[in-house]
Length: 109
Image 1 (cartoon, rainbow, N blue to C red):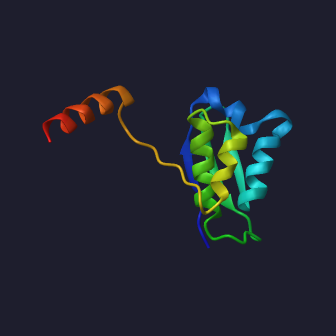
Image 2 (cartoon, rainbow, N blue to C red):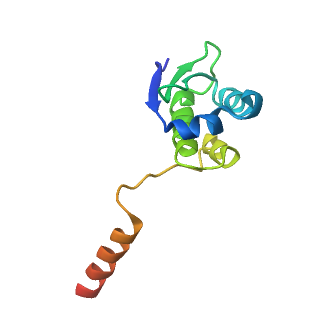
């Protein structure tokens, strides 16, 4: 069984993760079979598998949904990450710099 995972999110995204009356948090928990414990003061989110969790990737999926919301995704869109056909890929660096470097490499080939 997967173990508890945790990550930090920006404090200004804690409200989006919890949602009105806790609805977003509850939706994530239901979709992934996990329990989210959110420390709003620190921005730390603990993800714990429920005893009845069916999907062994539930904690992993919840982690990626939380990351997506933390990065500004609409929670409804982020919940689509539960699907095996959809994944979150985070690339480091700024798009402007990556695009500029990419154009230089393309011109040199």
